[in-house]
Amino acid sequence: MKIYRIHITSWTASFRYPNMISGFQPTLPVPPMSTIHGLISAAMGRPFATTKDKIGFVFLSGGKAVDLETIYQMGRKLTDIKSNVIRREFLYDVELVLYTNSNEIAKALWKPYYPLLLGRSGDLAHVYRIDEIDIEQVYELSDIKGTILPFAKYQVPAMIQALPVSFTNEMPRKNVGTRPYCLVPVKGGEGYPVQAAGFHDSLTLDGKKYEWDVYWQEMD
Image (cartoon, rainbow, N blue to C red; front, side, top):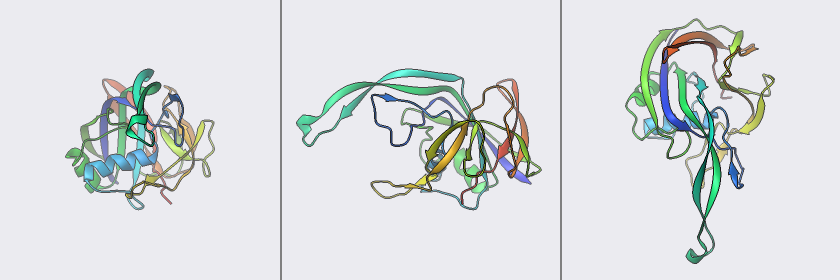
């Protein structure tokens, strides 16, 4: 099977915990599917949420840090607006390797309609390269990491968080397909085994060789 491997880089990334409002804003270790769909939507210039295209991804980062950020708290009147400073986590030296069988997605990401973001407005991303590769699909994976797995089907020892699959295009936006996911970061060692559709890939990023299994995300 011929697919596209899309290497996306960014200095920073941040994936906010859903429904969390506090004085400290942590980041998820890997992006939810809503971020992946949002990235593709920006590239296409229109809302996108697939049910038929194959999409898989592996996310890596150099580490995590905390920054101070000024926010503006709104009130009922303009005179009620006041500023505040909060601590916000972010990931740095980010690499997102996105896989798809869709030529339309690959073409859109190479020449995006809108700027690509990996989280907030300051987390600008860049498509470094796109490769067309041949893969052999399998149904038993042994090295899953740097991605998310639906908890209802695959229980692995990882953080569990309810995450949306996508958002509507109306205002205010509503989340769609929220379900519990296992968040599996890349930690340098072997990943987890799961019985699911996907494939094995090996590649070199910045002179370092990586190997992992890629899980095709299930949208239904």
